[in-house]
Length: 207
Image (cartoon, rainbow, N blue to C red; front, side):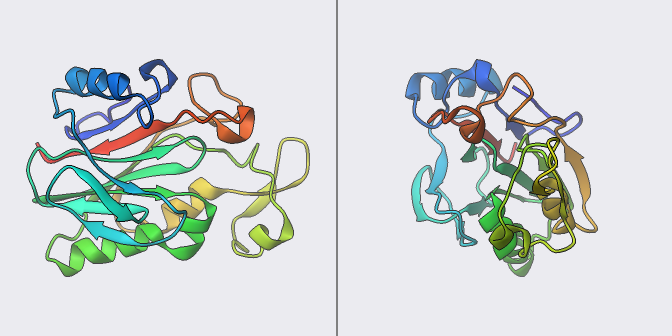
C-alpha cells in the first residue's frame, strides 16, 4: 500500500494487497490496515468522463469519478494500467479513473469542476501508478487525441505519455505522483502486460 507522505486520507494499493475490486476479503483487510470502513463508495467504470457526488457506500452507477463531503466515507476506483487520481479540498475529496479515453474526455477536469462548483475547489492531487510511455503503444486514432503528448515506446513505436496528460489537467494544484510503470515494473497488476482481471485501488476519504 502506498500513502503519499503528509496526506492522511489517500492510498494506492499494489499487487501484494490483492484484488481490491473482486476480492471482498482482500478489500476488508486493506480497510483494516488503513483504519477505514470496509464498505466503499464506487462506480461502474466505463472509460468516460461522468462524475457522481456520493454520500453513502455502495455502487453510484456508471461513471469514472466520484466525490463527497461525507467524513470517513471511502471512495475508490480500480485500475490495472489506467491512472487513479485523488483530489483533496477543504471538506471534500474526489477520486477519478483516468485511462486514455477518460483523459481525452477530461474526466479529471470534470471532477475538479464539480467539486469547485459546489464550493470545494481542489488544492492538491495524488496520482497513482499507471502505464508509462515506455510501454503504452497506441494507434493513430489514440495518438491524434494527444497531439502534444505523443512520444515513443522503449521499442520505438508510437506512444502517449498518459501521466503527462493527466498532470496537465491538474495545473495549479500541489501534485504527488507514484513513479514507475505498471507494465514492466514489479509490484502492480497490469491488464496490458498480463491480461489479468485483478485490479488495484485508488482510495480517498475525509479523515
